[in-house]
Image: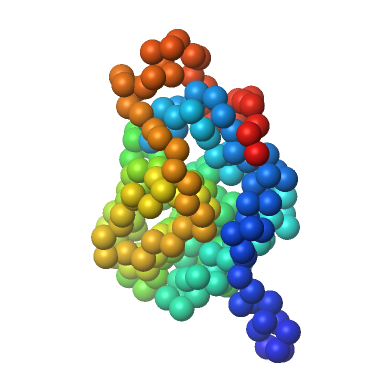
Length: 206
């Protein structure tokens, strides 16, 4: 490996550059959203807007790979659908396999012939994490096959640092704190503001 390629591999993605990527792709929105966790929020980070641009997706994958290279993942996996591109780009930078888990009857499963074994060291990647439930379910799934989970990452930690993964390295690229509510105590619901799910139009705030 040349000196230049080693230098490029170790280049950090700055917070300022990541914020500029959020703005340029219009990734952060305001409205009334039902998150994948089932919670409601007045804000939603639509990572698909960010990851639709290959150069930005590559930069994201490279930064996650830089942070986890030392734990030597052999597999990078993301929950479908939001974690698929993140996992692929990170795996590409690490020279690892890229897999994704799918939710079936509220549980995560490996399908399409995907498999892991006790020889695998697995990095779990997501687009955004709010409660961490999806990542925990993926971790439990992989460990049921004997694989070792060596880390968890995401583009945005929506909890603002409240989410914890005991005994596992958790290193998100960015932390945001937007309050989330149970549906029965959501002030937006009490105001009869229509709830939307990810992918529907909303007003851009960045």
